[in-house]
Amino acid sequence: MNLWNNEPGPASNVVIPEIYLDAAATTPPLPNVLRCMDRIQKDAWANPSSLHGPGLIAAEALGRCRAQIAAALNAEPDQLIFTSGATESVHLALLGAMDQQPVGRLVISAVEHPAVEAAAQVLVQRGWVLERWPVDATGVLKLDQLDRLLAPPTRMVSLIWAQSEVGTLQPLLPIAASCRERGVLIHTDATQLLPQGLIDWSSLPIDLLSFSSHKLQGPRGVGLLLHRQGLIQQPMQGGGGQEGGLRAGTEPVALIAGLAEALQTLPHFDPFHQSTPPGATPQLLGWRDRLQAQIEAIDGVTVLHGETTPRLPNHLACLITTAGGSPLSGRRLVRELARRNVACSSGSACRSGTVQDSAVLSAMGVETALRQSLLRFSLGPWIDLAVLDQVPERLQLAIRASA
Ligand SMILES: Cc1ncc(COP(=O)(O)O)c(C=O)c1O
Image 1 (tube, rainbow, N blue to C red):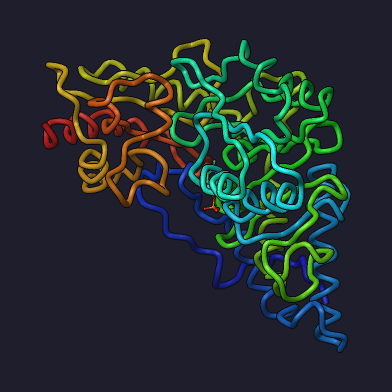
Image 2 (tube, rainbow, N blue to C red):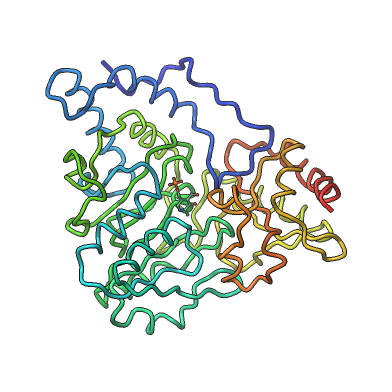
């Protein structure tokens, strides 16, 4: 039986809206990912911990996926812990590594995803001191704070590598190297970075790294925590002894196979020599810049980043006002654009169900009235340039309808 035989099958068609510009929220699964999952679900459906024939087939499939993912990331297979997504990975990283340690200071950036904030608050309830690393107006961490923030009693640092709402990339490597020198543990939430380029785990001075499969055209419901051996001392929940005893629960082999398949399509990112991850296709950056130039020409649109800010190659965040300068509601604009077949977002998908202030924009010093006016366009290789060129006109119509 060939578990990797990706013959076209009924599961290969995905319906994508005409102009889907919300990659940072989630991405459409690749046809080969769906075919691979379909096959694994049929052929290796059993519990990989079972000792009978079907169980051994599932265990073999799981082992092959683990090896394939480890090879893609240049990690050891036992440095991978499969989770349900980045939210769980982040919690396992912070709580699994620190819960049994003496209390100290945890430093996170002022622009973290709510998942990191939530995990950090659990440690605060257990006596930890939490400090947020400030950022400048572009969302980049202020490096002049490094010595103060890495000094005792700091025991752990958790920094988002690529920010989801505004796309800013952080100078993670110099900070991670300083953490290493000082014996401070460092975790990064790389959920938005990984889709733009595979990292070489063995070369990075990072202890723990989280990401989620659905941001990189894999399935929803599976994520990964990369860890250096011995750092995760405590699973988050009890039960079975899966994942080396560090994550209880029957492994979703088909989802993991989908993740393995999706990773194969990504280019490599060498953060030691490249300032920006390459993105899934060479054209992506050009498309983003072209869209940026077109929408910047519209009265009332202010793109958050200048030429020099390091940011994700597929990300475009802007604040929208009327031509007269009155802030418009990003949520209203998203709905107006959706009516015109453009799918985008007004910030983090995890916030967008509720009207909340953006802690990220606040940390960047954006004035209160404007913080509801964010529009985020995030691109992926499924987009075709001909339809992308229609976005500026539809945005103008949406602005007129929202004013
Ligand atoms: C930076 C970042 N971290 C964590 C998450 C949470 O990922 P998941 O929903 O897969 O748990 C997201 C998803 O929006 C994200 O963008």
